[in-house]
Length: 365
Image (tube, rainbow, N blue to C red; front, side, top):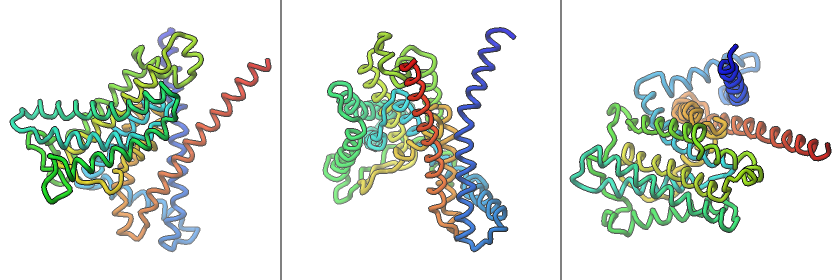
């Protein structure tokens, strides 16, 4: 076999190995969740497989069985791809960007404001909305990145604070700025030229799914096929070795946070342009950024993997209503998600201690 063939075979084997644990986590989480289905429906222990069949049937029915449900699932999947990829970028640099939530939120605000500009060509208007999401999301992610690089402050704490700063800034814009509707806590409806084309009047699913997939592919190319991506991944794998090799650690930390925030910002901007059409006041954070952490973890921080992972979590979220109709608590969905995260996190912990043991053996040797 040629050297190129060997490389391809080795790459395929490594890919399958990396997918094995996430797939195992999904299978185990569903098998555990079945016990709660049995408890809620009053099944006996001998009816385990009947409960398993019912759970699969209801999840499928609630997510893909009809055109309406499939489109609703797509409307959940789209923001999860953006926030999953945003988290994946930070993870690859060894950072934990809890602020994807705030960056997504600020992108929503940017989309709501830029969408009000009248008289623009639809293509130009959508490009401006995306650019606005990149700008504000990048700034919101870049600030904690710069603080981490300059002063060594913990990015987790800073990004959490930026979430709530962003929420309060957004609420001021929605309630008290010139963009607010008098007497209401809401911005005006965006122009028709700013609205992303919906697939059907049955759901809010729209062409932003293609934008999300395009950016996921772009980030994959950036991380694995360019010098920029090599340096970001190098810092995430071993900062000391990267610095010894001439890579600027601080610059790449800031860059990773900028990119992470920018992708989240695009997600928020297109969510306004394709789903909301206006921005309401925020009583709580939207939640897509936090769900994106689970998406990125399950995908092992692979942007392409985030697409499949987002489909899974989107399907679970979409099916929660149908589960309730059949007297199965919607918390089953959160249970499945939680077990998946626990299993994936366990894999990271095992690898961490294995690497630590290897380093100890090298030092002692």
